[in-house]
Length: 395
Image (cartoon, rainbow, N blue to C red):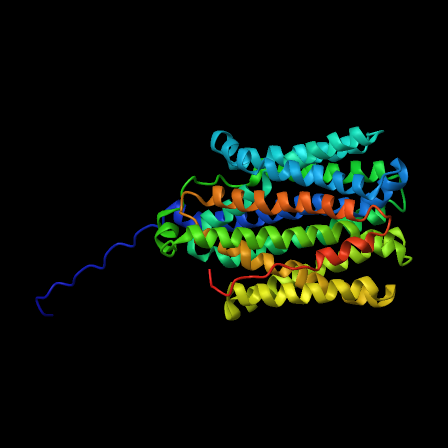
């Protein structure tokens, strides 16, 4: 044997509990955020199925129906920023759980309403609860994933479209078996279950990104002008989308569609929108934000005109493609928000963006509603086809 001594291998460093739990915690944040997004977006869009029912029960004009939609969306839009401030005091988990519970209570109250005023109050309660979801859930996903958040945010956005497809279809099916009030109590019970799950199982969200995520975030762009352009695109896009969705059930009704068929038609639009989130995410990586927006907005305008004048059968065939064009833009826009915000301002950036887009979605249907007071809902549709003209400059 030689006299050399062997150098002992360094002891293996134990993996910290934080390092072991980080992937699991990030996945839990993503999936619980997706669940909240699906529920709240489903709550928002099942109003479109209920509007014709409320018209029959309360004898409402198109302007009043658009105002009902505006009460919900307007309350939700105006409370986005206050929801972020409340989360700084209570924490994101508690605020999101309480908001989900409040949204469920609002729909339970709507099921007990006996007048237009009571219905407006109930929708305002539900809208105020839903104001917590977008800034807090999307901000949580962005915060825990850092630079790699665009992919998880696409999954998060996709989950919202699943809710938009599932709950309107479910409510349209339920009202064929029971009174609409009982159907609302059933979906409000679902909201209470989701609120309890968020309160018990959603991981705590750090106020700042983890060091690894923060160091991985790309250098912040000269974001002020970029965010302003992104904001304008989102506002104009949402104004058209919400105006179309508000009056699409009535257009289908004039073509001879039944209530279950209207629910199915909306589900087709939202399923197409979910596919559009993925398709436009792939397209956006190749064409850029502006190229993708121009392609989808032009396609939306053409398909809106086609839906107006085609018979019911062909209209049903076109609706999934309309959904692809109608909702696809948002995946590109939402995924760009954290890239144009500082690491400690993600929730505020999302809150500002959602305030503008949801506020636009609240006001636009009211304007279109008063344009359609001639009891011809198709009269409002040509206005919706005037899509925004974008600058050719990149964000």
